[in-house]
Length: 383
Image 1 (tube, rainbow, N blue to C red):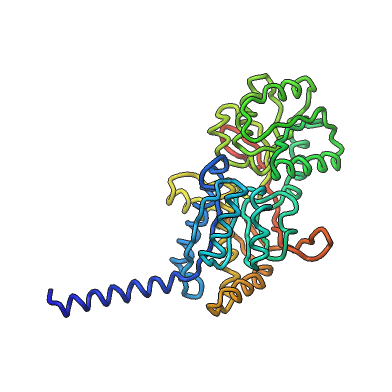
Image 2: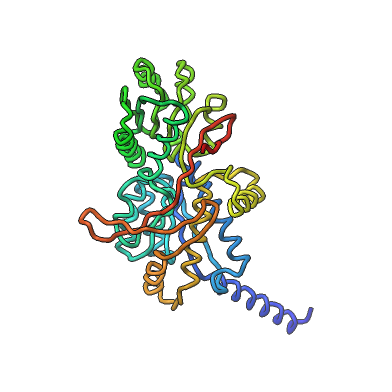
């Protein structure tokens, strides 16, 4: 190859690289717990985002521009979530941030995005009060306040539950919020509580609490826990001869429960907008694509992340981006509230909430929960 031709090849390659770089110009931040105790959620979330980005970019992106995900590990820790939000917003200068994974972390990190006038979009935060932080805070994860009453009501009808024992993690925003919502739902449904026991994140021995629960002779156990503790709780309950149904929150809706509890995983009731057995065309397509890409079954957290990027994409397609980051961040925020999408988790839209002072704040999900019970290492929809 002569020098002139060589220079031409290099120039063409450089032009191609420049064109590619120009196409991948919508930077979206993802703060997910890829390591640590919440890693089982965070990795599924990352997978959901990557799958959606791949599909969206393959279909032409956003008005011809490509989505480039900037993914950071916030380890499921409040301090790391704060650091990651600062990096993504001020250093990487992303258009918006998805995450973080846990409600604890969202309570700590979302105010940073609000102050920076940058959208923070939660896909797995279900504790009360998160979107009341401000009008740049969104989520498509349905709150425990909306899901738990439906779950308890269905379990009571189908399993003949007339009273319950309550067990919850008292050192975590998510599990404490879950307890508060369980308590209100039980009061509203006039279901008596035989005893209330607590545990802390990282505990591995729950026999003392479960022994007290067994002595109170409940018809079911209401459990607000992340799956890392919830799986062992199910195992130890069955080992102690407690065979009653267990009614769980959002944190227990994960295939990981079958790995942790194995043959002790039956009779777990959970509610969620998403189910692997929901055979709508959008969900069937998502599940098949996820299995093909990752050689594993998706969970609720992957599905919500997947849908979240499509929700944001539908809003972005109506925005005229100027290249001025602050203006573009505001334009996206203004476009998001009216975004609608029918995806793996069903039909979706936002509803604005109010802060503690009664002023308009952020945006919650409007979706109908599906109630499921575990049988034979699978979540089965109850109707």
